Image (cartoon, rainbow, N blue to C red; front, side, top):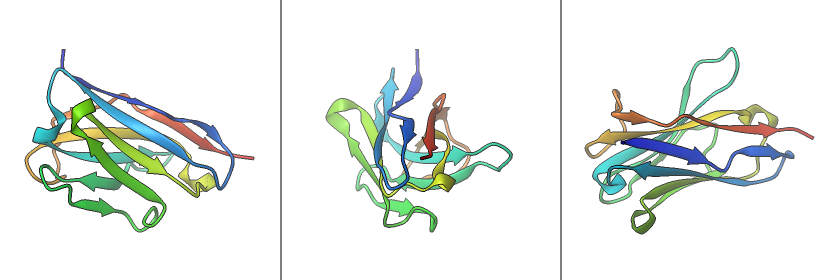
Length: 121
């Protein structure tokens, strides 16, 4: 079965950090560009980061730049999103998605089920 599995979300205080994981099951992640998205209640889905296939070029949205770091570990078939200096407005369900090809463009081939991040004191 082919799927993406996110983990690592949780409840964290403002200023805290989490490491979100996106593990591939049934396929090899290093053949894909990987994007991270988030969606808060009542808001549209927002693309926050992308890592390219092969040369690990990266992209961050302005809202997370300098606070989030995307990386991949091909040996573990996993992509990570290190989320630092968290703010309440970062609270959302975070999804990863895999795209065949070099860069993160719609449509994606696979989506994960999401992991909840809640930032609150």
